[in-house]
Amino acid sequence: MVKGADFFVEGSSGVAKRLKVPSVIIGLTIVAMGTSLPELVTSVVAARKNEVDMALGNAIGSNIFNILMVIGITGAISPIEFITENIIDISVLFVFSIIVWCLGWKNKGLKRKEGICMIALYAIYMFYICIR
Image (tube, rainbow, N blue to C red; front, side, top):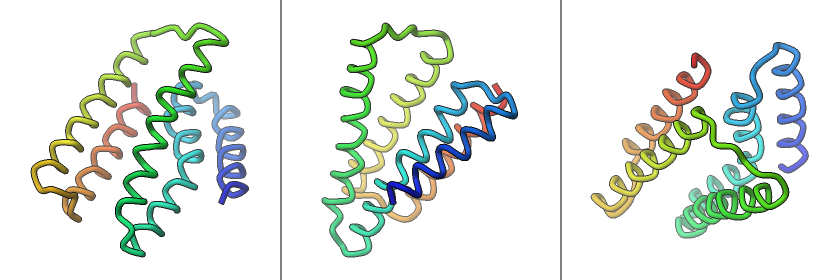
């Protein structure tokens, strides 16, 4: 899984750089997807084995780690500037997090319809960052 994710990120990032795609779009799409592929596979396998706590814990733990440790260590090494694009992306992250929390709280879980809704929101966001 890890080698496949590395191959995906390296190849896709190289092609995107040659096409002069901005770094923020490469990070928000290709790198984000590639580094999350192992977690996606782990969560899917856990969900298929009816280990819902493992799937959810994997996703939540990974995001908490990325937000606090990765950004924290990066900021400790070199200051991170908050440009307008970052503020928009952080706002979108916040809104999507609230939506997922509300969906889960309301129904005491996420059903197929909510999952499809979340995938659609992600697709809309990807479209948005590609056209901005």
